Structure formats: structure tokens, C-alpha cells
Image (tube, rainbow, N blue to C red):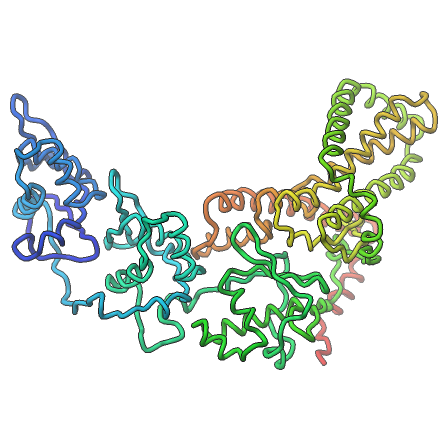
Length: 631
């Protein structure tokens, strides 16, 4: 259709029309969305008249409209429907306006060429009843992730939402209840789970068949594809849905099942479920100290492992056999299945970078901790926490006032003893670190956790210690997880406070004053190192515990990886903000620390022992890149 000037396409909610009320029932065009005209046209009042002028932005065209039509045109903002604009006009002008004012205004726009109705391609009508969805059949279906392609916009002063395609002009109107359900279409909730969430939030206002009717509407509008002959995966988008189960650790071994016979094995007797208040389940294996995080549907699937073959499980829960196989692989990799063991770390060729960070396991302290924990449980009482807090605060206040004396004492000791202080400082630092690790271990044991390992940790060739507190992830209370991580730092602050008062009261220049001063300094230095959230010390795990984001570093890097590759991300809201802030700082820190260290080592080696350095480098390159015997 040719027009007289700038035109705006009349975009309708999921369907197009070739005319208005002559061909369509009122219920159809009432749902159309009035387009935005402000990009091409401007409204102006006529002086001395109640009419308005609609003028093109270039000033070449103008048309006059009545006051009621002008009021309606103010609401042509691409957000309100025809019926909503008509309602606003009726509230303003009452019965003085036509019952079809907005429809007649649209017809006038079309006649003037301001609006253009695209002619749709002929498509067969799809009746909602023809889809034939039944709750019993689709309750376990995974609702696909629609966020990469669609957005939800609330309609002002209305209980409806607009579901808009990110590309193109396709859009559809849905009720607020349907909009709530659509927000859960993120790729891992089932139909039944979303129905339950809507009933929980809306109460009696949630229709009994909300999700079934919503799926039928999405299929009718062509947003979802329906393939009734495919019983396993009726919605095409579910082909790319990832499993809900994720190992809650930095490393997720077990992508391959270690033995074909394990598919039919049941869970070990010691394995049990822990219900988390945040809406998921933790499958815990106290024997091997491993665990998995699962949703409700995957919990039901895992509960059937050992009771029936994988093919029957897949058919019962309407998932693909590959999905069940993936769950079995993860169960085997975490030693949840009978006869399975945690896989050993693959032995890799030596790399000099390994000298920057490596561990030496020493012993399993769990039985010793279990034997002694009862005599120490008073430490985790509220009364002791109050006394400890008062002691640390008073120590900090007095220590701040004595700060100049502390600095002066350090200068005097360095001038008098110099490098001879290094050995006692290192020994006292080792004592502080050891007590620090016991703080972690006893706190986890107090809350019922398992501590399978304590050992030595070398970071950039500097000795430290570590405690395996992986089992703390199975604590359902965030405060308990936080205290497990924070216990070590609290121990260090307590050591600092005790050492400070000993130094303050000791006779000047006595061995007690010197020793307490070194202990005080070693506690502060180790606290400063530990609270760094950019390295995997206590500061990092405190950030994990406080934010509730497991695998903070790897998820932050993955978040940016998806952004740069243009892939959709599952991270939403506050989590996305935290990950977006953490990744750049972490990356800069890694580059700075390791880059500086490598540069200093290379500079010293090539300056002082160039021939030896080059020879060692050649030998290592031959060793590292020479094919190894795979057998």
C-alpha cells in the first residue's frame, strides 16, 4: 500500500490482519498493540481549538484530529493494546466518544497511509484443541530456554505482559500469570516444577492448567515446535537442554563411565540425600567425601537407578537415554554407585609451572577430630562468640592507639637483629598456619562434616598448609558454611590479639616481648595473604560462601566466555553482576603475579647461568613433547 508520508507498521500480537472490524471479531483486534508513532510524527495543539495536529518530523505533512483522537494518539507507544487505549479514552471522555474510537482511528491512519498492514503469507490455522496436550504426558517435560530469543515487557496499568521477539516485530500478549510462568522458561525447569512455582506465588489466582494451556498457546503461535510423533522429546528446544546435576566443586571429573556394567548398579548404602532450603538436593557420599547437586526431577531419576534399566528410566521420565547416561557417568565419577571409586587424577608430564602451586597430602585427621571435638564444642556457643567478639574489638581499639609504638618496635628489632629474625618468624608463621587449619577442621567437624585430609601447600615455593573442607558444601545453612571458611581467619585474629597483649605487658627487650611481637606480626601477615579473594585462599572461599556462587572463578571466566562468543548465559541478576566484576580483577591479578614471577626467574637465569638455563630448557622441551607410551 502506498502512503502519503512516513509510515509505521501496525504490529499485532502474534498475528496479522488485512483489514479491521469488517473481517475480524472485536476480540481479535482488541488484543492488537498500538504502534509507536513518535519516531516519525509529533503531536501539537491547535491554538484556539480543541483539536490536535499530527505533523511529520520533517514538517512536510500534517493532519488534524479531534481532542479524543489526540488523547488516544498519546498512548500509541508500542506498549498498550487497542482495548487498553480505548479504556483510557473512555475514562477521560466518558460516553461522549465512540465505542470503537481507537479502531476507527487505526482505519483512518491506514487510509492516510500513516500505518501499513503487511499482508501475511497464507498459513493453515492451528486450533489449540488440535495439539492435544495432557498434563500426565507433559508434566516431566523440560521447558526450553526462550531468553536468547524473547523478552518480557510489562504493560503499564495492566495485568498483561508483552512477549516480544528480540529480532523482528513478532510479539504476543499474555496474562500476568502466564508471564510469571514464562520467566521460568530457562532450560532446566520441568512443566510440573513451573506449575508448582506459579501456584506457590499466585495461590488461588493460579489456573489449574496454567502450564498446559500456556504450552498450547506457544505452540499455536509458532514459538514452540510440536512433534507428536517424537515421544521422548516433544518440544524441539529440549534437544539442547543440559542436565540439572552439577558437581559442586571446581573440578568435575567423570565425563566417561569407567565400566559398562555400572549402568545397572544401585547407589552405595552410605549415600543419602540432603534437602537444601534453596530448592535443590545434595547427594552425599560420606565414604569417599563426594557429592552432587540435583533438582527434583533428577533426584527422582537417580532414585530409580538400580531398580530398572536405563532405557526404562528414560521412558518413564520422558527424557533421552543420553540424559540418563550422563547422570550415570556423573554418579560413577563421584563414586556414588556400588563398586565404583573416585577416579585417580591422570598423571601429567612435569611442567615447571607446577612448582608455583602444588600440594603434599600428609594424613587423615578425621578420627582424631572426632575423638576430641566434644571437649571443644563450647567454642561454638553464643556466649563464647560474644566474649570472643568483645575481646577482639577491645584489642583492635587498643592496638590502633598503640600503632606507632608497634611500628617503632619493629624498626628497632630489624636494626638490632636483621636477617636473624627470619627463621623464628618462619617457625611462628608455621605455628599460626597450623592452628589456622585446625580452626577449619574442628569447625567443620562440629557441624557434622568429614575432614579427610590435611597437608602441605606450596604457593610460589612458599610453604603453607591446607585442610580438605569439601564436605562443607553439604551444610545446608549458609552461616555454617561461612563459619567453616572464616574459622581460620578468626583463629589468626585471636592469636594476634593474645600476642598483642603479651607484647604490651612484657618487660621491654625480654625474650617474651620479642617472641610475642614476631607472633603478632606473623598472624597479621598471614591474615593479609589469606583474605585475598583473587587467589584461592580463605578470602576467595569467603566470597563464595557470602555470595552463594559456587565455582566463582571458573563461572566468572565462563560468563565472559559466553558473552564474547555471543552465547546465552544462565547467570541472572545479582550473580551476573558479581561474576562480571570478579573476572577482570582475578585475571589482572593472575597475569601480574605469575607474569612478574616468570619474568624475574627468566631474567635471573639468563643473566647468571644462560648456558645451563638453555640446556635445561631444551631437555625439558624434548621430554615434554616427546610422545609418551599410551599403553
